Amino acid sequence: MQVRTASSNNNNNRKIICMEIKKVTEEFATECFKTGIDCSQIVMGYASTSGKVGMSSEDALKVSAAFGGGMWCGRTCGAVSGALMALGLKYGYSEPGMTEQKNCLLAKKTEFEKRFSEVHGSVVCRDILGGLDLSKPEDMNRIMEKNLLFTLCPKVVCTACSLLDEML
Image (cartoon, rainbow, N blue to C red; front, side, top):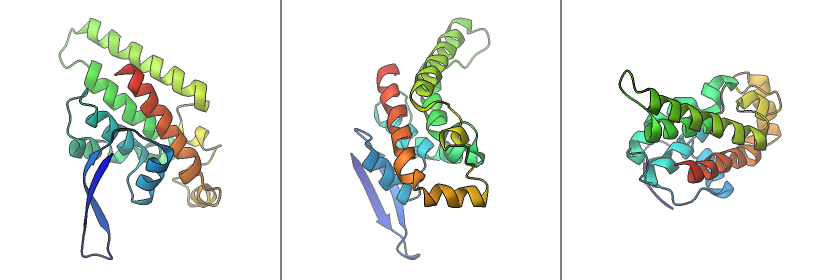
């Protein structure tokens, strides 16, 4: 794994310039969360550095930035969204009438969601977080009190990346 950073002048904030992720561990995911990189971004960043999806790590981080935390309202888990984006880049279709390619993608999507749900019980962020919705301040406080962002969410990210290793 290689992460290059540069310090900005604002309160020593760090800006991630490039991510090359060879393996995602719970520790790595936790560190990413602490720097403001979200679940969807970790998964897409990982997929982009595999060389199998044809996207730079910078573009992968940008395109997946709005999907963390179930799109910030507890919907589809950001790690799942990141993985589905990666599967779309690998197996997706871009022209009308590509029925065979569409069916291939839908089969991969269905397989991923089934296998992910077998491990985490759902593909929905709020369900994975035990009914807590991070868009609600009182629920976000409970998520932080229970330390779920740094204990459960890294496991979720690792599952998504592991499944992508097998499916891409």
